[in-house]
Image 1 (cartoon, helix red, strand yellow):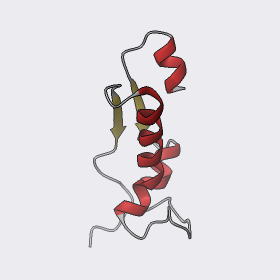
Image 2 (tube, helix red, strand yellow):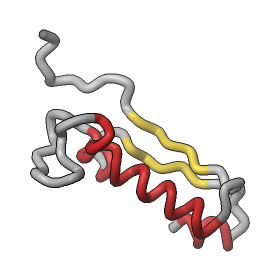
Image 3 (tube, rainbow, N blue to C red):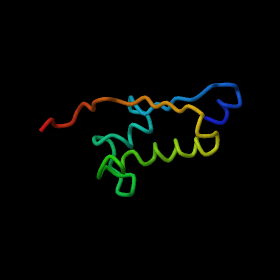
Length: 81
């Protein structure tokens, strides 16, 4: 999608990693139940998929191609203790 956006003349892209979209399900402690390198063990593991996608976009379109990320600042439904 980023390649198509760049080809269409867009200056950059924004990844929606909020609001229960795909990337949010990886980042979320409440939703991520994976038992692999993308699992909920720590932030590095939960963000791995998003980071890999951003790296691939930069690899294909160049380091100067802007990639924004919108994400939740808080996650509701988790115990506060």
